[in-house]
View: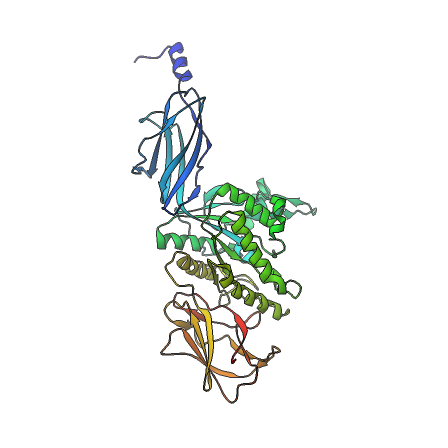
Length: 476
């Protein structure tokens, strides 16, 4: 066998080219597709001993080359660098990027599990962070990745949110000495091992969205339990990682354009002090997100707050729910979903299984495969009945057993024992008929989902619940 002399081997090594990706995809990264269904990916390479050499890119799904990206010439190295943009990467993946200094041979640098699809930001408080039991959780998909709170692209799996290890201080917890501390090493592993809660709606949403559309999904978890609109205020943006809004905007700059925001928050504002200004603050925040992300028509899908099993003041809870309902039409490119019919895994947090149901139904709507779900439309009186019509119903209105959730009230908010039966109109699948006896009291009002823990079970055939509404006048 012929062997190279030490001089010859040294010469070969000296003139080999090593490629480093200075800027470009990392493993598991997701790029937001454009309106043409493609993504442009900026790329900056550092190449040793490469001046004048051509760099080639091969893009593969598994071992199968992607048409149009088979040993594509990216250009020549100058002064040890190559700065370019890989244009027109089609929706799909997972992709493997392979960079070479020749058309043939092994890759000198590579990145794997890259996706091009739609990115959804997850924000709000605990019911978006996810506090469902970590039992029978949504299974991962190779078509769904996550930009975790440590600013790393990873394969998405439950739990998506991990506040103690987040990059931004606003998410850290106090240690035994009362000092705010980021968990690392053994302490972080202990937290992960002992964790029993953390399932949310984000992963079920993403998996279902991809199933219905074939479009991969990137998730961008930013929620934090127990937080109020004041803590999410855009006025705190300049605090960056010391504020929720600032941290989210900071991270958005790392992610790039997104498809939309999934929001679930409002429980912390359902009190007499800030409840009356919730709607104003909420709409200001949505406008700020659209402005600061430079996406004026950014989709904003959110969940109306659901049940809370306790005995504190009811009125502010319903006030926030009604404010959320009214905001939908004002925001534009926005959909509100209901959680009032959801099971809980404790006194306030939606169960893992109903997070799955809700997330999947929300995905069907976001994917354009379903109507928004039951939305209050109108009230009409016909004899001894009150007809409540809904719009955006998928199929028919349904209920598990007797229809529950409708109540009549005086203008002062007191309950009126008025409705003795509720039924579905056999001629109109989107109308509920409420039956009463005697004279309708002057000024009577109607609510659906009154209180903090109502039994409200109205859904459509997709599984989307009717939102809490009211009080609204029964007769004009």
